[in-house]
Image 1: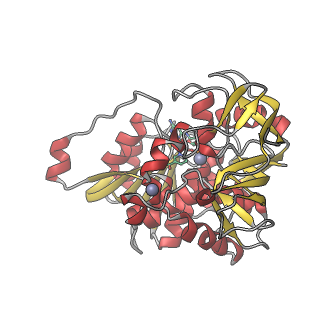
Image 2: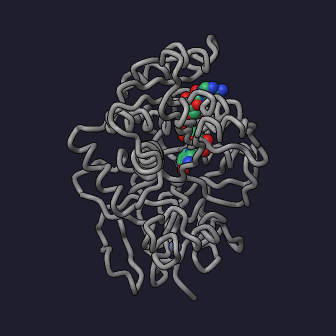
Image 3: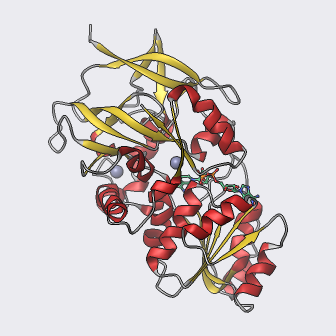
Length: 372
Ligand SMILES: NC(=O)c1ccc[n+]([C@@H]2O[C@H](COP(=O)([O-])OP(=O)(O)OC[C@H]3O[C@@H](n4cnc5c(N)ncnc54)[C@H](O)[C@@H]3O)[C@@H](O)[C@H]2O)c1
Ligand SMILES: [Zn+2]
Ligand SMILES: [Zn+2]
């Protein structure tokens, strides 16, 4: 019999059910290419909420959470680049480091991760957690809403030890997704004009990514004045509350009828994706970062697309190369070049996780971070 380790975690049991805090088991010895991480902190991201609210077909039972950081406490027999005691940020896309996507520098598109982690199982097709006789999956093979997580080695990115782990956790999703969409996916040039629709954890990081890239104008749009004000503190130059104003008309006015060079949608709704596309100038680029519910489609005018050479592109995980970008983004924070402190609007216990999701549903705060 293999020995096991206790994990206290927030378990998804079905759409629209409250997460249940349960005591689960995980093998005490990681697989050859896996590590066991004692979690320090996990953010709650809207992608967890999509699963929770039934926007996406999601298997149960499963430990949610994919934005976390912690300390390695056990390593598999073939792990060579991580040691017990290392601080790591978890990546919700493990990379096989062998497929055409990994080898060509696009690990976020890893074939094996697509076939396994995106179905919430490990590379061998199996989950790691159990609840009595029942298997329990880990969201995106991470499951950071538990006090311990087993992950493939490629999903544990070693970071400097002097960085606070609550802020580091956010680099595991919102920060990298937002900054990466600007810097890696769209490659926004200095002097560009940018529109960011949705000022949540992801959108605000698009805003600070635009500032890093040297955008000369960053317009933010949201339906909450509180979020718009936060947009300003992260670098926005103009705000549009789309409850009171038509976004396309406002962008037109703010850009002398030209439209923006780049527009980023960071909510996941068809009308706002369409509005982003319509708000870019001739030759401009609209970037879909927000993720829609299953089955949602958009309407765009293909004549405009060809006639005006407009581009509509997607960004997954900020097109990041985790082992390069996570430490780099953390350095930016430690040097004071980006703000992660104000992203944490609540520090809570795991037992309060359902309330954190309710706050997110109401559009309040930026990120609630669970500290273990
Ligand atoms: N592409 C990726 O790799 C990736 C990674 C992480 C998250 N996401 C997705 O990004 C989206 C945003 O995630 P988040 O964690 O920032 O969410 P969030 O809930 O923190 O933020 C959403 C924001 O949108 C605003 N909003 C809601 N409805 C609106 C409307 N109709 N018009 C204008 N603003 C509106 C809310 O007020 C809030 O500020 C989600 O769909 C999430 O699944 C994508
Ligand atoms: Zn996320
Ligand atoms: Zn791969």
